[in-house]
Image 1 (tube, rainbow, N blue to C red):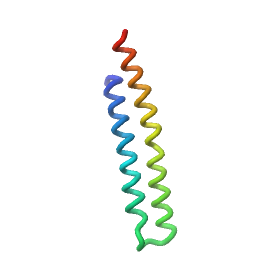
Image 2: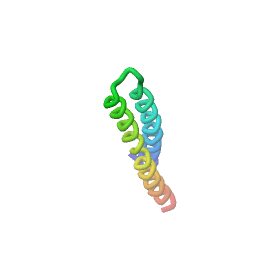
Image 3: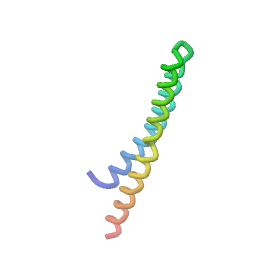
Length: 72
C-alpha cells in the first residue's frame, strides 16, 4: 500500500471519527436514560472525537512521505 493511499485512508478515518462522535453524543444523550447512562454516552462520544487529530496528524506525515517519494 502506498503512502498516498494510507494518507487518504487516514483522512477519511479522521472525518469518520468526527461524524461518529457527533452521532454517538447525540444518540446517547436521550431524555429517557438515567443520568449515568447519559453521561457515559456523552463521554464516549467525546472519546471517539479525540481520535480525529491523531488520524489527521498521521495522514499529514504519510502525505509528506508520499511527496518526498515523488520528488526523488
